Image 1 (tube, rainbow over the protein chains, first blue to last red):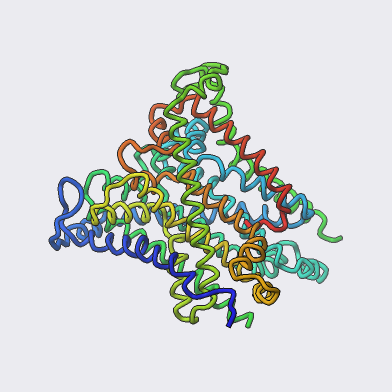
Image 2 (cartoon, rainbow over the protein chains, first blue to last red):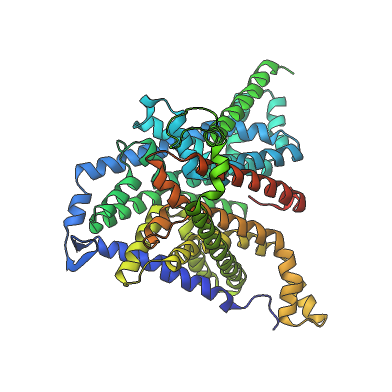
Length: 262
Length: 266
């Protein structure tokens, strides 16, 4: 039997990520249950100390702030990206391709230098505040929302909206009753693409937050630096739990969509 | 049309949103360009127009050593990742559905894991196994997200591939490796290039994962900039990135001429 693909071709990648992704994440879970070694690392001795610290009100408050920030940034991105994607979808093919290039290009420039640019742009009063961090994060993640939404718009049948308008729907009604449901899959994947990295973001909260805005990413890095590895590991496990929610939602969404089209 | 006023308002809503998005994305890039012409040696404040950032940029030994390191790591990590990711995308087709789903999950998981978790877990992993950190660990770490990215991009391309082409090539007398290099690889070509450039860009700009997996003194470009952030980015650093920016722009425009935009899947 001649086959294009033979099974073992997939083995190197699967083995690699089993060892260097699943392995390390299990090490994190294990380290969160061990005793702290003052010089970094851990003592091979069980301790519930890190999780006692990671379930106190300070840690939980920081996690709540992280969720609030990521939700706010995702919502702001949706609000800005929808009219954008709608405007882009109306353009000709060539102009749209040019716009997509324009919109993805800043992602190729250094994130650190863009963050530095924001440090010089933001009024001093906005630095070290949660809204300031949110603003910079929103601007940074725009392409992750606009591009999936635009794809959804391209897949959608434009004539449905015209039909709705012809039948007397106001543009507002046409959006909510027709456009929104048929582009929802793009919005869901865009939301996951924004929410997940934002909730683990370190650089932007660190520099724009000026040490005053503590979120999950800065918390993990700080305690890794302070050589309290078990606590840093426990915080990373919390972050993973936070991120599992949108992953679960988008997976359920995808499988429902798949079974609906069958 | 009865809704002309509302449609007029909608059109303007779209324009305003596009303008806001452009401003939000390009203002910080513009700031880098402006500050590359700063006369100040340190760069925290604007002291006047000067070209000395551009005059001195090529004399910055440390900066160029970091640039070379970033280019080398990006090239190696991206090539290995695209190779492994593409093979995985082709091989998984032959797996049984249940194990395939499991393997796909493992391969795609790093994409939906925040960088800080990947960085921390690798640092703890290397420390637990007493592996000394250096350039090798950085490349190994970049391959984690690289393979994941390449796999997802290439899975789409492999699904569109017509499997009969391969057997047709064999029937016409090609050896299996000839069928791969003469038929399959040219068809997958544009997607391979896109996947390679994506992974390279991610690797080139990565800070967190490099920061926690690098050895002492081993600096990539983002690590170098991170060190300058507190005391102000030097005009020379900004100048280097302005040159890189316009270099990439020219390259991207050239590439978009070569690859028709319709084939590029972002």
